[in-house]
Image (cartoon, rainbow, N blue to C red):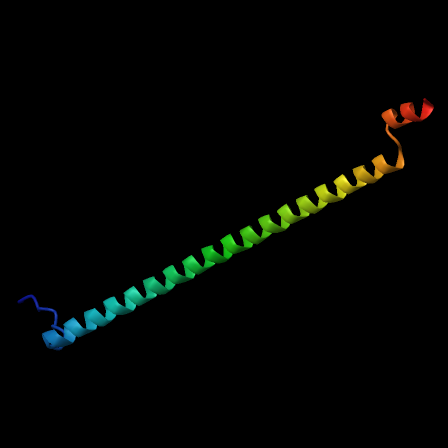
Length: 90
């Protein structure tokens, strides 16, 4: 018996095929662009968060240094230095 050919799909015009594939390509490009924009936005937010954390920890470090310096100055004011004691004794 003769081998039956698979039935071909209904004929479409070349312009229909071209338009469909161009639409598919455009949709695919749009999706890739959207994903890329989301990734860039996510990275930007991460960098912004990291920068804020670094600024906050730097500000905290400076505050602590300033408080320590003030405490040390106050301590010096409370107790006279050895030189001042020596001068008083004369």
